[in-house]
Amino acid sequence: MKEQLEKLAGTSLEEVSSACDIAALDALRVKYLGKKGELTAILKQMGRLSAEERPAMGQLANSVRASLEAAIEERRTQLEEAELEKRLEAEALDVTLPGSRVRGGHKHPMDVVIDELKEIFIGMGFEVDDGPEVELSTYNFDRLNTDEGHPAREWTDSFYLDEQSRTMLRTHTSPMEPRIMETRSLPIRAAVFGRCYRKDEVDATHSPMFHQMEGLVVDEHITFADLKGMLNNMAVQLYGPGTVTRFRPHHFPFTEPSCEMDVQCHKCGGKGCPTCKGEGWIELLGAGVCNPHVLEMSGIDPQTHSGWAFGMGLERAAMRQFKIADLRLMFENDVRFLEQF
Image (tube, rainbow, N blue to C red; front, side, top):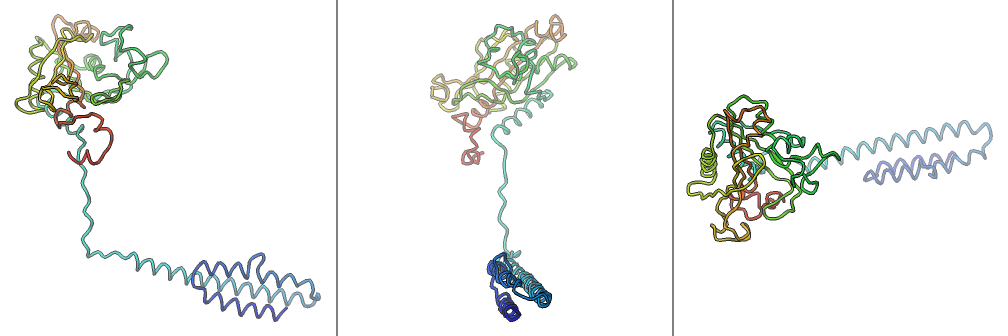
């Protein structure tokens, strides 16, 4: 048994010292020190020895095991250092080479339009607000003179967050009108920007999530003429000289009289195309003179003060400015489209 242990020690140490990689070294460890290894097989013969021989053979076996384990660890360290050196050489970075150019980002077309509108209205003396996207139906409807039976309050039109229809994702930025009127000192000039939500089918000009801007002016002697002048001035500043607009009679519960403002279709120049659905015009916003009842609910005397308000879908404004034919392009995150701006 002594001869077997000495022979195993010599052979194993020689093989360990010549192991070419970590995998080969692990295979040798299993071969000699594993549960079914050669050293274990030799130790199973201890039962054949006399009581006097066993301590000496046990001590020799432990010495062989310790030497082999030390040799394996030493060779492992050598192989790991060699592998690290090889990787460092392979992954060396030549700092004298020119670096890769970092591509700079730029604004999304929606952000471009929002920032331009903010600049326009700040230049006209407006304060900029945003407001909550999760809104109370009291502000979204009741304070805007929209009673319980109005179609806009149907579950099929709005995203409600409770069974009582009290909390919802706002359907427009108009709830900020009563919020501003009840907290702001007169006179008021406010421009509100933010996301809104409605259960619209997705098409070239509609989306269940969209951006909107709300404008509100409350002061003494405000008339419909002030509204038309301000909105036409906004359109010319946004789209440039020669911009053609038109105003059509309409109805909104919170304004009286009410109107909608259109801009001539940028795609066909007013001739009619799929973008404008053959009409030659694209609806840009709804507006009107503040309903006296809305002013009263916010604590403003309609006998001494009047005002006007409008709400504008910003996706359509961006489509008109950048001549985009389909609203969906702005939400699909296609880099080929976004890199154009």
